[in-house]
Length: 537
Ligand code: GLN
Image (cartoon, rainbow, N blue to C red):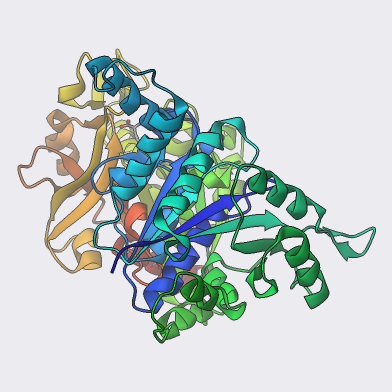
């Protein structure tokens, strides 16, 4: 079967949840037995989001093949069985980079290189690049209709539809239908405007997904249908939900997947969402109370910065039948008297996530010391591992000036230092240890117990690593290296076996956790938090 395409655009405002909409459609189509792939096209000019601050663009999601990509790819992987690669995310920067290098090589044979057709051709071939072997490809266009920079992408998908035929590609437009309290009404005007903008550039949406806080009554749907030139049944309410995993269920109730089958002329197949429904039920109504996890980080004011982490903790809760309540703790504010006690006091577990730069590190070290000494479950991820090693070196081994070369380049005790192959490299784009690496676990460790096997593979994103020169001293005093690369070059997991649960890893396990397949380390950490909660009662 030739691949069918679902293009998703967004209107009115950003942050309506296009990524979740795309992922949810993917889930529904897989539940009907179709093989699905998803792709994100981002109009910004960065070649990839790797150099962007998480404050600007949310988390940088890392793929198996080591590409720093958009956080929506995380939704795709969590909701479907897609494993994303470098070809699942294209930015304008990446498209232009390729067009310009072709121009420099002389590939355009003296022609004038233009947005249409050269850039749009490049976009279309980027779309086709991942189609092979999939029944359905869902392509999400970042940004909002009306942005100057998204025009080449919209033009490219307009051409794509024209070339592929009516039943092979559909346009889904996600828009906002706000409820105006003063008028007591749902307002359709923003949707009308955004569809008009889309039609002005030659795209007539086939389906409108209307983001609202309530179900849209029939007469309003009728009005939207009339003004936007779509059939009434194709006006779908995308209602706000309690947990994001409910989105596919709400969309299915509105008949979205059935309409897609019809428009794309796909064979009817039964849908099986039973296991998903059960999972959502578990997430919404856990039987075993709640645990509070304190996340001590530097980007905590902006939750999108830790999107996958947030989800992985939720998954750990699902696996333990408990609700995980997150307590975001600004690492910078842990300095003053009693601030630490107050921030951490109510927590059943402490997590220090990944990050870059020295800001907040002092607070993280204090939080780790507290967790180590008071025997509170601790989970460190990437920067969290590096801080755990520094804390141990300073406070257990007595190396008061131990530090990471990232924070204090001239430290006399660089227990964390720059990856050997990066010595002398100053450029920041795409030059970290990235993507999947194998790791061997030591029997009897917390990690081994969690995974239940000794060979694992996890995703990385870092420039600094544990300096093995200090390991002998540290392991003699109670630190355990429980995971390393098979060649024993990189330290991947360190633990304190004498502690109820103290584990930190150099990789980012959060990127591989799914609601239906909670990650072993999040499952075991939340399990430890539950045991700690027991002791507090
Ligand atoms: N800044 C640290 C490094 O580059 C940690 C990176 C991270 O937490 N992702 O090694």
